[in-house]
Figure 1 (tube, rainbow, N blue to C red):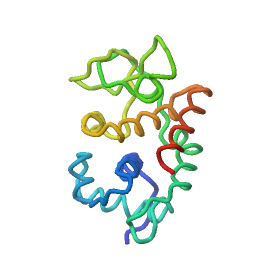
Figure 2 (figure 1 turned 45 degrees about the horizontal axis):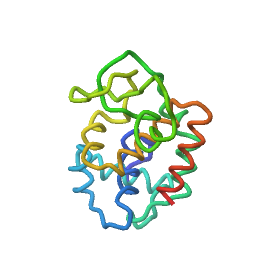
Figure 3 (figure 1 turned 90 degrees about the vertical axis):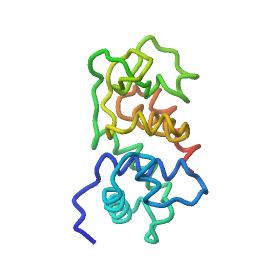
Figure 4 (figure 1 turned 45 degrees about the vertical axis):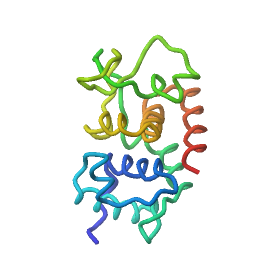
Length: 170
């Protein structure tokens, strides 16, 4: 195994995709196709996640408590984000489900996406292929949007996001 040189943003997406699959079996090639990330990057990501203790040594099971701890306490520091210019895109953070039903806000956050239908402040996704992957998988979309709440949200929003992630990942 290669030397571990730290987690990368798409590692989080791969872990979220595995979580979104629930009890369904998953294969690296499927993760690659569904996320638009090369098979070699998925393989290296899985190895980094095992080394970090976010996946079990057998590479088949998430370590949900460790993943939640990292998301809640580390994500905003490792992959910080500031809302940017107004663009057209796909809603994220509190502007996307599941929090869009709980939080009413005039300001929307979006991942820039040419085929998006919402105008809002740009939030750079953890990987450029996130909007397309989210449109194919609503469960994954919710997890990715909740992670963006942890990156850019206010205290109440983050508290709601952590609870929603606990309900979905554990």
